[in-house]
Length: 113
Length: 110
Image (cartoon, rainbow over all chains, first blue to last red; front, side, top):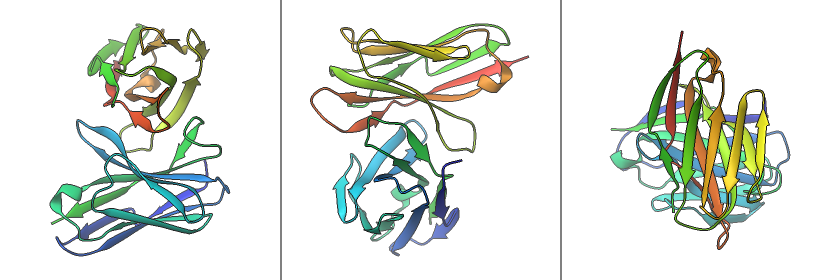
């Protein structure tokens, strides 16, 4: 298994509160991604990073921010959680960019009430 | 820009074959295939980088028709372990962003 750890694995939070999800990798892969998975939509890219402090938006980035201060950590922050952000969040890593094999973490199930 | 997969769901008996299609409205640079079992993370199957390319391992293979902007995943002599949701992912010639399809649920029954 690729060394990817997501934390927490499950979280319930209230509408309007900020939430931070963490992705930690031990593979020293340059590229890291945050996806959300919802029924009927598959996996949709939120943000990605191609190096320390280098990040960019994906197709569903509104309401989310990210930070990458170290190669091994990629943080996803929901600035003010809404019920529409209830989802399963997956972190992924790849060695050489989006055109190479990606390894996924086990996911974080977030419920916003 | 999300690719469209068909069928949405399929049920097979062990030993039967299945084909899953992935189509895009954009000219494609590459097609990726992943499988996700219930409650687990997606797992990489293969990437096709050239039009006309075909790849496979075990009894799962795929083709990439660049002109038709589509890819097909072939599962032959299906096994119970093939059950899961299959996702294609694509990168268009004109962009560098990766988009997953909505998935195809495949269930293999004894």
